[in-house]
Image (cartoon, rainbow, N blue to C red):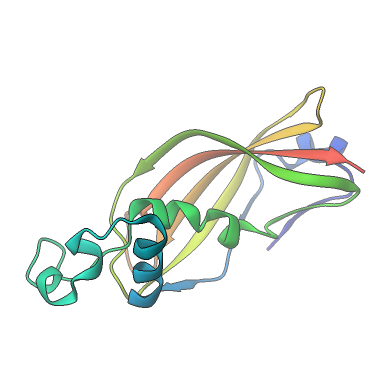
Length: 151
């Protein structure tokens, strides 16, 4: 399901609505690529053999990798027409609740919690939860903010 509004001025009407993305596989190849891109080569992320005997039973995704998947996973969940641009405005709060093991699938659950007009456009606050397939505890919960500029 997608949350859809015809114009940024209608964003307050979306408060309380939520949408869920498709599942995305977080495999070892993605974890390795993130380690290479960021220089974070801690063994719990990249040493498959050592991690199998470690505290999680397998390698795990970097917390920041999971966080970085938010734009991909949540893209299209809030469809706002008549915008010149939409940009990431920031985060107010992020909590990493459970690691994502290599081979797990994750998805985003996004709930619109605020919509405020500003000089630049409409700031929309969302509670974004990254869920792990088959797990009760999510990987993370983040309060995200996007800015929508009318076109």
